[in-house]
Image (cartoon, rainbow, N blue to C red; front, side, top):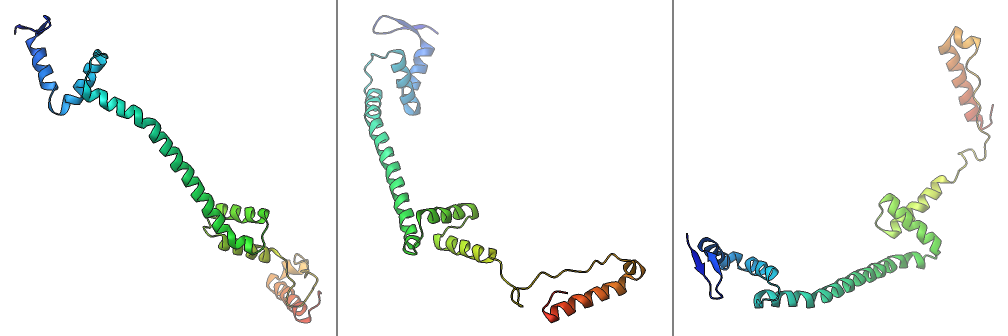
Length: 175
């Protein structure tokens, strides 16, 4: 292989010139021109220079669009939350109670404000102690089952204790 003499007088290996010729066309042209621009930044290469100029001009615009989209998404989310809170406000709940409802929504994975409010009300109702069927009764006390009689005949003593408990329930009075 010999050397080729370029127009500016420099000599180049024929293989390198052939490789450069192949790379400057087709799929590799764009990358080849970018590499040439990196080696010679002052060289005017319109295909590379225009793309760089367009990218430089559109970067701040894309950033601004991104910020506007983010702000719009936040505004939409706030409007959605306000809209979903309206029934709670109409029901007379305070801001603290609404926060409590939303906390329950997050903790329990409830997606609806009204459902979360029902959940809280039901839990409060279930937590409230109620009186038994006989009104306000004293708690029943079971007699001590560990006695001499228990060890002598456990089945007989268990029947006796069960009978005492049933009698207490029927009478409505503690024994």
